[in-house]
Length: 380
Image (cartoon, rainbow, N blue to C red; front, side):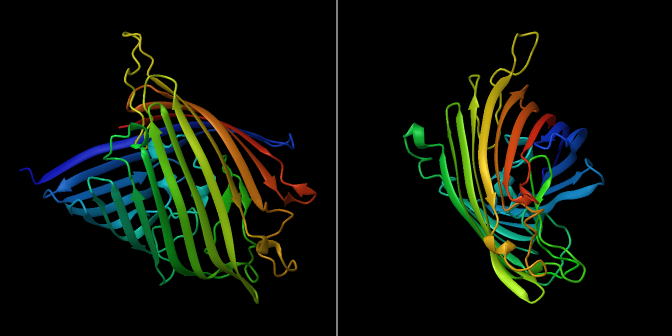
């Protein structure tokens, strides 16, 4: 009757990864289905959109997105449910459009999906975008479905495309923005509500001291701030973000405000006559043996760093928040990749990532890590 429209979609990601470190003793390889995600989206009575998706890749099924959005005015939309919080640049990019098989280091510090309420809008024909949410609150780099305390996080993001409506072609693709969040989070020794940080291949290089009676835990204000940008022109695409995450942490009688910082610059360059974009690349000549077409090829590269607070290691073994003999103080990573787009739905990744560390071993620095990964992805 025109009042209901339902659309079905989804994605499947098949991965293979090979990991080696400088010890020459640690070598692992694996095949996995990193994502098998059906997605249902729709519109009810013209002004209400809904999204429902689940994840069947990995060890157990889980809910990904479940939200309803009222969109009567483009400049004032209201969303409620579980959704990506309006903060991290790379996390806000659709999962199927990320340039690498894994997210960069700044995404370790930003909130993922959370349950809450959001107001957002596009103004001046998309030149200006804003979003403000109130949600349960999650630790850095994580997502959650259930609430673990009464406190809430407030998150806001402003996004500007200053030259979108001008005739300056070289600047029309420049976008800049800033995101911030504030919340009060409290944990316990057996439920710390603190983050741990991982490398591209999923190895944890930093986590706080744990323990049922004397572990570290969140104990107050959590503030995040992130300036970010994207730039697209012709065959070139760039994105960058810098994140500061500040958290009050307690261990025993000692407390401190600890700041973790991370940054990343990433770039993409189309080797064929195609144009990268934040919403993905669509080949002008999709793969077809019959027509002698090979799709689009894209070269990508990135470099980034994550640094923990020096205060993490101060004090005695009974009061410091992390052990320098096992937890790295910072990680520096770089990577290169080649993406082969068969068509708008199918894509093949080939990536190489390398990570080096400061501290994290009894005799000095944690061994460097080398990670080769590939993914075949279909999204529809």
